[in-house]
Length: 262
Image 1 (spheres, rainbow, N blue to C red):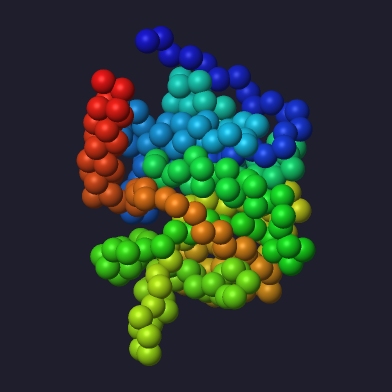
Image 2: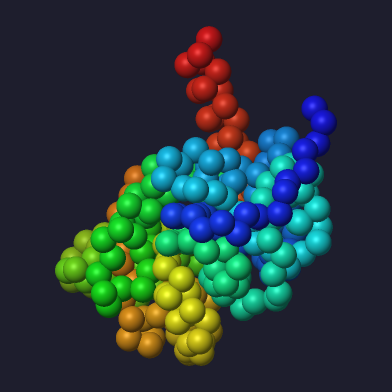
């Protein structure tokens, strides 16, 4: 099949747009966005999940790397070139300066199985955001002990109002007096333009620098992050080993789809 070339992202105002931040130089897995999963690069799978969501007015990949930009153009994926940034959310914030929208859904480029329904749920939650909350962040319950102990899996604890109290790569809460419920933070966030402007102005605090979890920036400066429980049984790809597991999961999903329609 012939390659297609994407037009530059439209600057017409949109309601909700997905932005997929992708960088080449991930310390644990350089070149990860272009790693092959099945017969397509990883970022293509994330883009497809966004296209399957029903509430979005567009999907844009944001990258500072010409190799990623070139592949996006070849695959017909809208792509915006950005400067270098500390985090994916900083990259999304730069995009927001050039892409007018009512809300921006940050879908991490290493979540190839992210649920389109979960993306829509975050979009819907953005319509009812409390004044003190600057972001919506999806989470799902963890029932795998290995994932609880895995430092690549970010855990979150929430308060009675469903706002994040703390994110950590360690298993929190500690099971001293009761059996804890462990929650996995998904790489799926919703922001307004104002929230993204605030994020870029805030300095990184010691917790964010220590844990490497960008949503801690809001919490350390006294802002709420609204946590939204969703159903999602996917797999984030942080390492080459995760990519191998994702390949097995993709083949399982593909086999089920073929059986359903045969």
